Length: 115
Length: 109
Image (cartoon, rainbow over all chains, first blue to last red; front, side):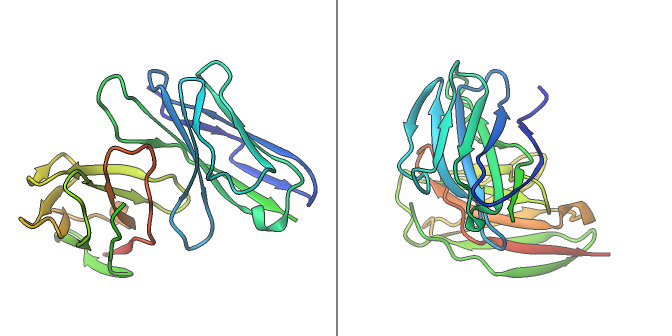
């Protein structure tokens, strides 16, 4: 068990560019979550997958945000046409519904800076 | 999910017990109380959760009042590595965690 891995750890991009972040969950976990955290605030839920199905996406911040988990393993979060307000930490978490372990384990996050 | 109230910040001397309170007076009968912490520049870390009985694990103890309107997370022997923001989160098995602003615990040497 190597934990939840996120890549990259830091990303600086110019306003208007597209960015994509990757999350590799704990291998036996079938649930995957994305959160966003701005300075001084707690993490804010964005979206949730069970296996490859995206079961909740209404909390994605705008239609510029999208997420995929094509084979039920790793996931990507894409932000199109980035804005300065998108600057934040993007966190991924995973958990298992199969073993009854419902606690979510978080990665270290990707810090996005839009300049 | 129930609303929570936590102190904005607390200090604790190294080696002493840290007692972090949380008020969740609107908690419903099927909501567990989860505690997470977030060390600076890291993702949140699960600590413990409980429904109505007190719980203990290798990290902490959780005391839930009989009426379930409040709880206390206890770190029995705080170390400098316990300096973090601690979040109390009622959750009824839903897929999302609703984080508030938490309590910033500073462990003082």
